[in-house]
Each structure stands twice: as C-alpha cells, then as structure tokens.
Length: 121
Ligand code: SF4
Image (cartoon, rainbow, N blue to C red; front, side, top):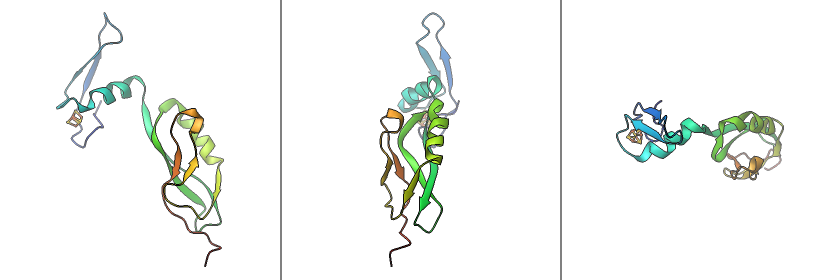
C-alpha cells in the first residue's frame, strides 16, 4: 500500500508476523511518521468523509459537509444514509456543526462552506 501521511507517498510492504499475529513489520517507509497510521489503516481502514445534506432557504439545494475526524470504513454507508436524509436551513456558516457525534463515533459532521439565506437582503 501507499503511505498517505505525506505527499512523498512511499510504497509500503506491511507483513504480519505469523508467530505473533498482532505484530506487524513495515518496509519501504522513509520515516516513522506513517508507521502507526499505516498499520491502523491496514487493520481498520478509516476515512475523513465528505458528503452533502439537503439545504433549504439557500442559493443551492445541497450543502457540502465533512467529518471532523476519520470514521471507520464499515460505517461509511450508514453515515451516507444519514447525510442523505438530513436537511438544514440557511444561513449556514462554514464549520457549523450539522450532526454532533455521529453514530457515537466521537466526530461531528460540519458544514464545509458558508451559505447565505435567500430571505436575507
Ligand atoms: S513513510 Fe514517511 S516519508 Fe514516506 S510517505 Fe509516509 S510519512 Fe511520508
């Protein structure tokens, strides 16, 4: 896999130790910064998630949103379902919390941009 921690993108080989199944070895890394992240990414893939929620009273129909931290890959479909069924009303400020602590994962879904209200002059 490719290390995603910095733009260099080292090609990594992560191997499981057969006598100690919870011990991994890493080759191909130019530094140790990516070690923990890359091992975790292999065992339990996670993502900063971006999506859109329905928006009313604004100059667009959908508001771009993102999570404030990584979420497990196996929760992505559930979160996308929630986002697709969430509606907010403008005005919205960039960074406004749209959904607090989604699915109890300890991350929020926040607005990725500012939208003015249509009713404001
Ligand atoms: S191993 Fe280090 S240098 Fe290589 S991509 Fe990851 S963080 Fe960057």
